[in-house]
Image (cartoon, rainbow, N blue to C red; front, top):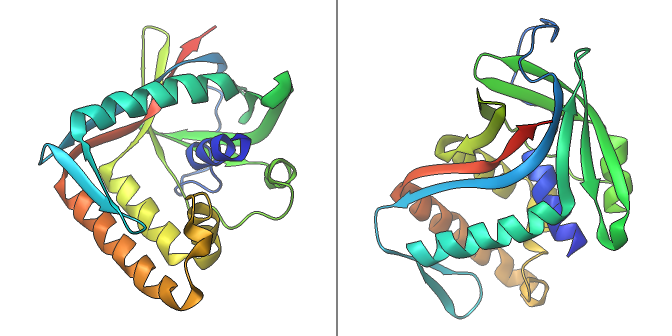
Length: 223
């Protein structure tokens, strides 16, 4: 379970965000300490149910049930591991986490704000220590952020999720890491993998085409 949550956090705080200029963060509105408050998830779909098939049996879930279950899981699991972020005025940051057994740790990195985006670059050595070895190349992610009443909302939308999924599915090493988290996926015969991966690509594309609104992220509270 720990590695599942770590992958989620890595997906939200990944390496090498979108290109930006070299302006300093002296006037960044994010400077300060922020504690995790709750997940942010907005999802509107063109149909009332989503159908997806990974193994033999198709998976069908009503959209409203999916939204409820996802928010419940994110509230419980992410809140248990992700504690907050400290943004320093020198452009560095610290992500505060709590691992299984109550062990606490902090992941360092750097950040820049650029218009409505925040770009973060994590210390890859720390990520390797967490994952117990080398990690695959993490695709670029850019957060949209809004700041109001000492609450910071960080999220990415449908366009960026679409780009992220395409990058993951096109990167053999990263794709293998993600798919290995699916129960039973390791039992698929090697000769059948190309057809399974093609089917996954087609299904994901179809789901994203029917997705009308998607915002996935979290809310932080200034300390």
